[in-house]
Image (cartoon, rainbow over all chains, first blue to last red; front, side, top):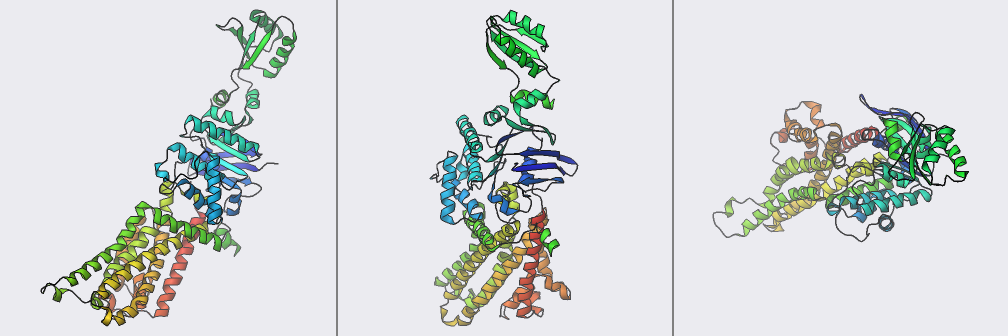
Length: 306
Length: 273
């Protein structure tokens, strides 16, 4: 059962198209929202959070339309992309203020704000104003305000921007954990390997259109007009190369500097892997390692947008 | 009715949300460094009153005759420092930037994704700003009045002291009306400061030269009706027949309500990309 549905969603600003006919549905778990600058990621998140209206099509979150529906935001958390804060407030004070706007009492808000900050790795007792925070600390604070009401849906716009490596790792782990807990998390990023660490499930936007949606490996498999590279380590690489050529499903083979490694290119991944399994069962070839070289997110992204 | 509700995004302000949004704006004001300058503005008349009071303690023969009595100077203070300047400037600074400030700082996104209606959010922010302006104006005026009247001893200040509540009501209603005007200006104009200044010092000052009913579309015309003092130094405005107190109250309250409703409608309908 989808928790978030987008149907033929378009949004334009005058003559500029922000989104064009986007349709997809998300279920609980983490989905990476990917695309180059200007792809429409932030526009999509703003429509989803009711900040702007669709020009055409519609959006449903937990079965409800977000525009003009404030009650829905008890169940939706949003971390905006912009590095905007209330500089005079402390982190806990800021989050507590946001929670009081959600109807919580002062004591309840302060307690929940502290819990959310702890979860994002910030000290809830930190007194200094946010103006004195590093960008990473501000990102953690923004993330904490999105988490504070424990919403079922989390929409995170570039939450890793400006974080140090430790912060990135902790935030990635947190997003993964949130997905495991059953939240529907849509997290946008242009840093591909980071999204890959959070989830294999991606939504690719380009020029306002949904270019691809699904598991990154499945998407890669759908790309039939490009050869796919697979690195094979075996005891007898030359014999293996010969057998592969005989069996078909291979468009090219090259040997590397490593004597026991060859790289195979195939345009028919399913067929290739099926035949490789058969070969693996043959004595003497000694296939030790099979590593697809280009089904990582970056390759998928490159293939799809160019 | 359904169409009207749809126009407001299908939502109406709720008391609990309104209280939360008012509290948010109120608390935020006292924390904002930039806005603390606004509070300093309100302190200027108090400092002037303090200076006058101190001068009265100086034993210089030539000085004492030229220093006015507190009961005489208080109406002048009210008109010049408050009615013409602070009462307009404070709501302009607070009201015109109510939403623009959040847009500029990029913090509006946090507020728009809270579980409270845009109507509650805007109305709450307006009420918070009005409370701030009312406290600043009220405390400032009371301190200035007490300094001016007390410098001569309170013995002869009885009538002036009894008029203080009228002055305060006039200031509070004035800040409500000006706040409503400048909130609408802030939402509809790209240059709210300029438009606000024109309205405050152009339109409002042109009252005496405006024909008939048009005068009713200014705030100051109604405010002077609330102050029971024929001795106010109002210049050309004093020559006009003031409206009745009920009429002035009705215009100020109803006018503010209409302007705030318009602002809520615009805010509820607007996209904030």
